[in-house]
Length: 174
Image 1 (cartoon, rainbow, N blue to C red):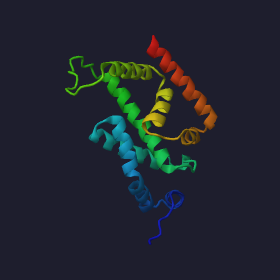
Image 2 (tube, rainbow, N blue to C red):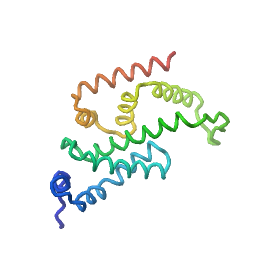
Image 3 (spheres, rainbow, N blue to C red):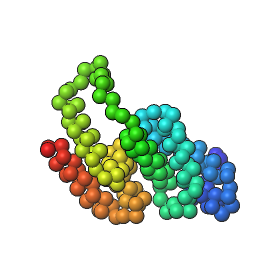
Image 4 (tube, helix red, strand yellow):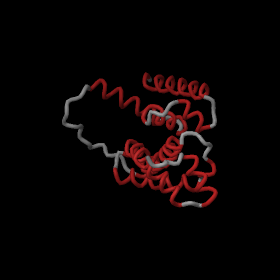
């Protein structure tokens, strides 16, 4: 069995010795996780690859700000930030296509309307709140991990999530 250095050991090598091979090992270890998160967010393979590359570049530049928690979660959060910025730019520059036909498959119209209302309510949230929703519900990051990455308590994040859900419910009812 080959010795596999921990994330902390690899990061120390990168920071102390500028060891490019150590960072390559981290990239190999986490590329599929970061790419999967980017693909779920961007829904486009090329854009997901771009987000993944940008996330690793940004992580390398900010490696000294990593706090020692789950490195994969930290990378995923970076990728989500990058992806959300890209989506926000696209939303502000692309014209709306109102002539899109619905998919041919059968679907529950009431459920579809609820999902659209929920997506619209989420889109109206401030970016920080949308990011919490993304991480927790779409990326399945535990609240504890989110709290650690944001430098907040888990209870603080729970309260924020409760308030966000209440605002979403209220917007969906109006």
